[in-house]
Length: 441
Image 1 (tube, helix red, strand yellow):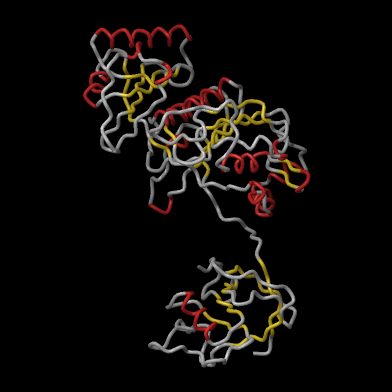
Image 2 (cartoon, rainbow, N blue to C red):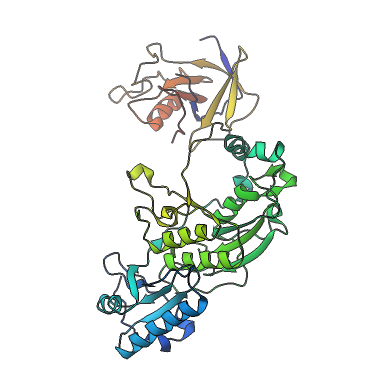
């Protein structure tokens, strides 16, 4: 082959793009006598024996007076006490959900379900933490610039002059990095519901500030409205104000009743838009309590945007939670139209993009190598670079100081790369048999 390679990773594997529990104890006192300090002490339940439940009372709290909702809840407490129902109240809701989250045995929750005024009981779901982007600086990559073009946000900013000024956006997530310059002076409301050490099943220990130690909330807020002049970065609406509502600790999951508490708080704080980039897979019914709350937020004039979840590959009907609410904007992911990758240059001047193997050494700029391949190799040779029986297909020393071109297929990337390296190759270029790209591992 006549072409040589410039700026290629030494001894790297490169993929050329497009080239070829235990049971909980039953509470011993009715709800009215439960100390408030203990109400957030939630015991972890197995999927088959939930001990944490929602109790929903009849009546939409968005259409009832505060006095009416309070009266219903007081009546429920009195009836439960009169009949000797044993349970503990964890949280009460009066704004967007009329009812409580409680700890109770299955026998006691069955009794509760039959009390006058009870519309329904539902298990409180554990909600997994979203995938974390620890470093916000890494999150504000050029990928975001192309995403803004894909959504038309660049037109809104540059042609229509829309920046989000005067709009308050609540981010219900892991919190927001309050000291990051992308959000300086723009977090106007914050509430930590859980504390650093919280995980589903542990007591909550809220912190006075909703700072982010998980990273995902800051990543989301950066997309929504980050504005970092030092990086030349702007999110979709770079002049919005933020409400930070922290429902996850530094690690671990949260519970549905905490999510609803955060949604109610965002409503009370006057957020006009609320974002929940949090999935709750296969809870696909609009009657779930968090979905009902999402519907009521929209009914009250708020824009609610919720993740469709990350479980679509597991089959249909994978959505769940808030995203199932009426008129909630349910958002799934799509592939970016642009990606940023490294490239090497052929002696002909053509540039070839590639993604480095994992693991692989960092490439060095300015290195020039001749390209070679097996004489028998073609773009349809699936066994290209694979062992022949137990023998290396490359003669010892035949690839010394060269970059070898190998087609994907049959054996592992590792086997192909190792065979080439054992024959002295300085670099391996593994190319797709189909169009598109895939990170080699």
